[in-house]
Image (tube, rainbow, N blue to C red; front, side, top):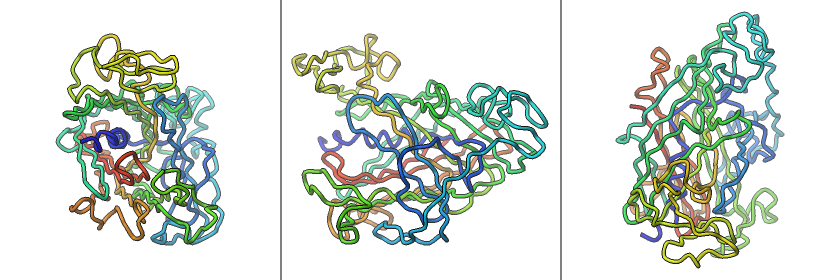
Length: 439
């Protein structure tokens, strides 16, 4: 049980990030939403339709003030398969997709402040979430309740597989189609305040809280952004692959990162290789969702109480100080982990208990993840066809597109994602798959 406790945050984080939605903007980058500019470089320049450099998560117990997402880049090389070790097999230099001018045929220039042509609104910006979508169409509320019988995340390691059911709701703002664009795309955004996940009870361990977190580049208060393609979308399948050791191919670790884990210090870890492929049918969606996961060490009761406490600020924020306030060091203060009102997962929980914001791309297509040389063992593999504690790894998961004829109703649609992580506390390398299905 201790092992599961140590990595629950990673599991629940991944699950929380897989909100059922369709996010992006009205720009056409050859098959999907274009996120705000990031300083991170792509790690694979020749894989399928696009390469995404994932956001870097700072693993501290204090939430990071800013939150950004990776840049989607269109590869200029002819698409090819990626070798098992995850290294690029083409050295072509990618070029960033040009920023759209939002001029749509004869429909007018979206964002100039004047509704023209088939624009139904134009408030002078192209962010959405304020009643006027990024393509200058009027937004409609799209409430979604997640089906707890079909919404879950699964953590896969070399030693075990751990499922976790989730439930809750979210309200999205859905834009309309622009006839002048002719692409059938409908932008959609979600506000952090409208993410309402129920507390996750992990009996005997913790109460986990999933929250939406603002991404400033998406707009004030917005935590998710994307698009539904009522004529279909390109790049609907998303692969997230990692190689724990690429030293044989890159002895100077020029393209990787030196491992800081005490089990195998200095090993050259490959950077995540994220690729998109295939074309989805009507109702396909691509998502950027930002969430943070807080863990409250109350034994998994999620009860209303102020007994459970945590260190705030100081030199060891996030430390459980329920039994002793002296556990807080460096000027830290021992405060109720569920806030003064004792209710878990609401707005008065202390910042230190709310977790770190992270952003991932999700899809209604298929998501896959894998790790080669897992746990720094040659040819060890966590992924489709691999073994995860005596059972087949669940490293591929498929979603269900929206029914555009029924929008803004979203019943039956599902969003999925998969990602890999190296050197997690106690359980080491792991793959997480998640699915959220609308009632």
